[in-house]
Image (cartoon, protein in one colour):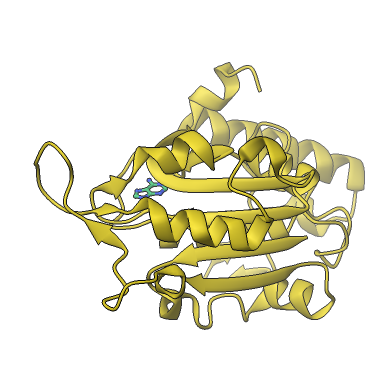
Length: 234
Ligand code: ADE
């Protein structure tokens, strides 16, 4: 998989993809990640990426021209219909559909090439959405000052699902949300830490009992914290 990130703050990403699973996946060439400065795609002296909104109002709007030029450079076209197969051009914005584990799975399995456009300021010229964007995505119902943290969230959630990115094949299957529930609690040594004891069942080695306990705990936690997950379709 190839991931391109388009941002006016490339420095923001300087080391964030250099750790853990993402670093390993990059070194193993499971994924290639490149961060691009939107200003590199400007043509004017001042390298202008934003302008005042038509109709008035606060803040600045990211301009069409540099984004169109960048997408043409990265995908070969500015017509969504003509993107190479498996291309996703994703705009990060609070107006998008909310990113879920299911969305991460969708992008990990369908996207050979993912371009992430980090929105900024008050917004992005709507013609970017109309012509270029295949998916507008929000990471939750709160407003960030830009799409950069959201892009990092997507990259992490997607890359760890790519084949062979995780050490053990089963790890992703046991994640929170993969079966619609939160994850069960985990313990490691010491079994007794300052009087706080690990549940006996985990120490006894009866695997059927351990599985039963884990499932029950996952359900109990989900009921308490995220009852909505039990009621949702997926
Ligand atoms: N940019 C600003 N807020 C955002 C959010 N919640 N998700 C994605 N991008 C954003």
